[in-house]
Image: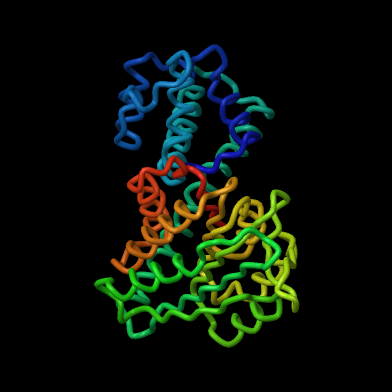
Length: 317
């Protein structure tokens, strides 16, 4: 899925004259051929059928479903087609059109560059697996006494078991910290220097994560505070998993500094949270990238017959 913003979409759609369901002067067959030559996809595949099924709506569906690299390449080629048509028809490119074209080109470049960053991170994990350095994982949890009880122990046990059974089990070093207070987290980050940080616990609808105070009760930490903390460790932490309700808000804040952050878009059940952890670490233990591990975590929720597979959301920097 690409991360085109609404404003970016508006700019691109204006230049490509997508009002009324069209895409420039391309016919149905011409658009199908163009997309196939550009990114080797059939824009008339059933999965791109959206709303009226017009050319513009199919292109919008493709942008929604395909990764940054694919969308960036297709947009770049469409921009080049737009400019070529202007030249061939002897039409003058106005200053406003040139300005819009330049902005759309920057959007295309951003999407392509974002994919390079994500691919680089995947290679970094791969290099760690292939090399002598181990991947360090820090599992932290909090289950305050004045909150509903969670099956955190079961989740951590499943994660540990899946890594112990993994083909590449010798490549991972797993550390756990339970009943975590705010100072415990910063100390663990300093002591362990983890590549991956996994939090299990409660989250609030405002996006705060529930750590524990000295009495073992809820100590909420807002998104900006954790974001500031992880900024200090951005050179060592590559991925953060927040297995807590409503943690997508935290994930988006932390993702300003960390390559990949996984959070939950709404409340998530214990069963779904555990299933996601199982799938994620099975994939990681098999040498897969963070992105692939995230996807397998979501699939594992579905395999357990739990209708919550869309709740985990990955945010990339």
